[in-house]
Length: 493
Image (cartoon, rainbow, N blue to C red; front, side, top):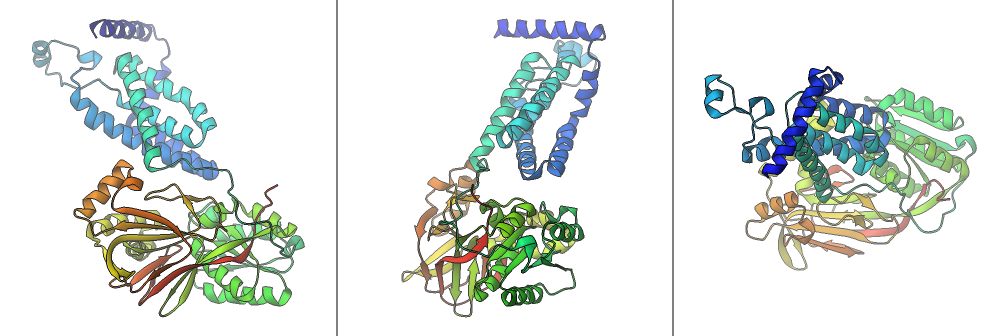
């Protein structure tokens, strides 16, 4: 260790000499730009604005990795190290005489943040990560150049940051951009030249997804340019979305065309119900915050859907069904009961004032702090559950955070249950989520089923269907309608 320390100090002295000679003065400005992560937060904002879905994923993982690495370096690692910064490498008596504060040099927090952000970006977008890697290396060099750290501190920071980014994959699996198979062999659907016979409703109240980011009026103009003979209507804040979609479905049925919807998963769910009732194919234009259904179909832009409509390229997808004593609801993506419907209810009550993402963050904190398991009855037994999740089709990965389906026509429900009946269930649940071991936890159970019957919902008075919180009562049956919906999808070829 003494030999390594000597090499480290010799390298620092050489860099200090170059600083005295005025070599590379721009490194000082770069070091200041990286203070408090400003450089990386700015980069994340740019990636989110212009990088599309991949850029947004990369920015989110980069910022998350940075936060984890910064906490590990500045809160944990530096408390275990007593190595002073190079400028403070004084004997204690001299340090006290000069009243020089003691700050710890090892590891470099700036370097840890830089490596974490760039490695996090590289996990989602390797080319973007490679482009940013020289900037991260320059930030590390700047910390030595300014005299804030020894080279060994920077290398340790780089190692810690890269490890933090790699660790995020344990909780948040890397997305797979390869479109999954969405159904059986293509299904017959009318080809609609220039959109003739297509009735589309654009929901201006949907989230800030990639399509509506430019504004709802611009979205309507884009759809009309892509499909000039389609009937494209904008549903404004004062309009009745169900009524507008019903009218559009009726017009499409009379013309022998198709129903189209531009919005989030809740809007798509409503349109799918109307299309199913009338035997119409559905055209989905992604316009929500997450657009799970569209993305699982391989649709990333309005041009993708428009091309499929013109070509008549479509497939059949399964419908999930939630049937209780009062209603029959379909779901394209997910059904849940337990803590999640309450989370959705709180988010919806706040998002008008706070916006969707801040409201979601507040709702998560409130719900997990105050939530209790619900009691349902199944198979003649009462069961206490934190969460019952049912996906319309098999989801990946296993565990608490399913993100992507491998198919939309497999005839299966992906059922996942978080059991609240075990001792210390809340603590065990939190520990499993934080450690990324939910799939192996005793409070977690999973199965692939064709149907699931609950004799009674007990004290679970709400369910969530495709992200919308709804009232429910009595017995509940979850089932599938195989190939229940025809939907336009870009050709796999």
